[in-house]
Length: 280
Image (cartoon, rainbow, N blue to C red; front, side):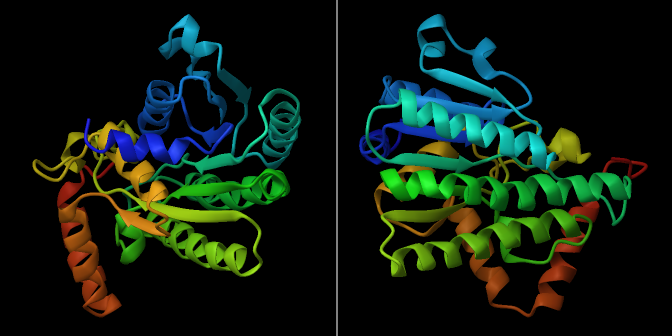
């Protein structure tokens, strides 16, 4: 696999990984690669679904699931308290890697499919990231560590037909870069990195309502590729990384034109992706 030595080096300092959304997609691939590169690393997963069913008995020995609906603040706070106690009591001394991976989208005009779904998107993609990071930051300050937030290439541009989703990822990208600077300036021993994937082969587009139309030939990366690039970037000390040269070219182009121009182009592309009938 491309870049495994560098990805392996990224994990070596850490005694524990805390991630959200490990039961599918990119999160599941994070767990798989962690188990391959550093089998004794303690992994704590926060999600509604337990990812243990996807892994062997040997893997499950180091995989600890904390059931949590990230859109519910009380559940998230309770899970974070349990994770903190578990890491302090069970994990070896050493830094902690927090991976805020969970998120979903809706490729529909606002406020379709309904306002409640749009608000839930903000809760999971934005509020939960800020909330969990704030709750676990004291743990990371005590032990040292890093925060990896999964943003998206759409965070670089306005996204008509996915206005709320794109805005949530723009928040994650900019918040992460700013947070990293705050942590660095305060000499906390903690850093942050924003990972910006493009089209990735997951169930994301089914949930978003566009199905296979969202996965363009030549543009879609595997989750394993995205995760490897993310860990390589962490090892290299980067503050943000866009996965794949085509995605880097696209995000660069988006920054070279005005926001209205970028919105016009992106909106035209996303409208063509919607299935007949436009339902989500």
